[in-house]
Each structure stands twice: as structure tokens, then as C-alpha cells.
Image 1: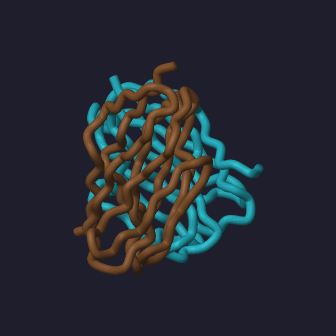
Image 2 (image 1 turned 90 degrees about the horizontal axis):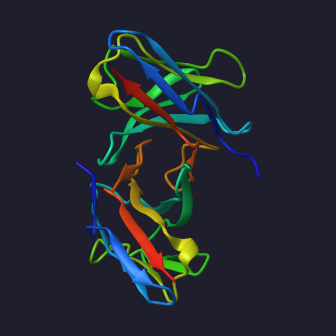
Length: 115
Length: 112
């Protein structure tokens, strides 16, 4: 069964450094998403991406964050200057369409630790 | 704004016990409702979903019915197994929105 993959599984970085989290969505999917889960808190939406554009973003997704689909398979989340509070599990997801009933399929996550 | 509230965990049950995890929601439109499960060390997996009122989603012995009148989507299973131990998330996606809105998750532990 096709699945969303994410690399790395764990990233440790120093405060102020840039990080890029990588995702390979399911191949025929058109919509891509990033979510994060700070330890002990809810899973929170960051951004959705369709047709090479951001289609929706949350208040969390400020100028420090950016997303890109650099080629036909990868989808990346960049954090320009990491803060301690960016430490979280980051999940990538994808869906076939943007219909409200459509299932979003999640990857296993990247645990980001900012020191 | 939209929100999802789940019963507080953790929940600990014995094998073959009946399970209910409560979920209620607030939405401005007519949302689709989802239950996701996260097994240890893995990502979120869709367990079941319902897209309109009175729909029942079911999978692996789990069921949940979309109740518009009570704005609820409670998860039930008649006889739980040790392998059901996981964290369960209720979520909604509202009309016109891309994002899923999640509840806080309920950790379920099943003892043999």
C-alpha cells in the first residue's frame, strides 16, 4: 500500500539554525500538508499546498516557515531560524483531492529537537 | 472557530472490555469527522470516518456514528484487544477548509 515517507526521523539542531524537513507524498496525490505536535499537546495544522501554491496556512506558519515542492516527488518544510519552541514532531500528509470528505494520509513524522 | 474535545486519558482496560472514547465538536459549517490512531513509534493512521449526519464509520471492529444533534462522534468497540493499545485522535474537517482540526488524543492501554 502506498505511504507517505518522511526524512529524517529525528533531527537535532542548534537554536538559530535552518532546518529542512523532507516528505515524499503518495504519488498520485495533489494536496500536501504539514502538521506539528508539541509534546503533550494537540496535533496542529501548519500549512496546505496545492498546485505549487500555499492554499491555507495557520497563524503558526509565519515568515520563519516556508514550503516547497522542489521536484515531482518531494515536499519540504523549511524553518529558517529555529527557536526552542519549534521542538515538536512534524507530520507530513497528502490527499488525492481537496474534498472535505477526502482522507489525509500521514507520514511517520520527524522529531525536531532544538537545543 | 472549529474545535474538537475528547475525553481525558489515559484509559486503561482489560482485554475483551467494551470501549467508548467520547468526542464532541464545534464547527461553523458541515464537517466530515475522522478517527485517527497512532500506534507506538508510528504516524497517524485513519481508523474510520463519516461524512454526513447519521453515517456510521467502521473498521477493525471500531465504530462511530456522526450525530449532528449532539455534535458528537464517539468511538466504540465491543471487545478490545491488547493490540488496540495506542493513542486515538478525533478530528474534523470543515467545509471550505483544508485543515484537519484534532482533539487532544486519548491514550488507550489494554492489559491482558
